[in-house]
Image (cartoon, rainbow, N blue to C red):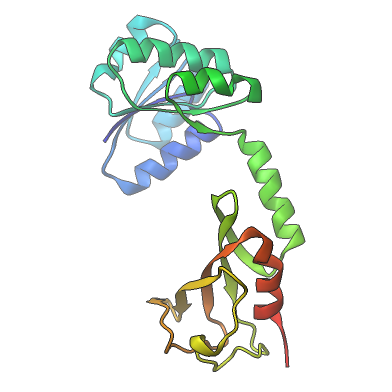
Length: 219
């Protein structure tokens, strides 16, 4: 995949780190800050253009017309929207962008941009959830009413040695997978749970507290 990224600091840099680890994508970064460009060049073997992405000639230099997706990560919505508009005129069809201000959301939506909300807000919410529910190893919101959560089985849990079909799970809750000794198993009704297992469940948001009580309960 050919990916053009606008903005190489913060989220942009982290995104490049992740994509480069997969070793199968072609990346072009555009950033008008020379120091950021030099830092990325030292760190990664990718094409880096030091320039203003709101200028047509800079976008053309990146060969953006060949790109599969444009990602804008600057902290200025007007810059992101301007670049998206220019790229759209050059034939790009797929866009992902950071949204810095809630009131800018409709402007992005008009351009059919896939939105990533303020990461600081998301991180703060994730930290707060971790404070509230320390027994939950991870969260993934998949719907306004549902979540995927991961919990570990405590050595003293009443669930140790129990068959899954004998466990009374909260309403609208399904055990999806079991991680045990570095192996991943698809959960089945005949399967048993053991100390140290990490369980992935699909559940309703209102059921998370019940999940914690069930999987953290002790003899």
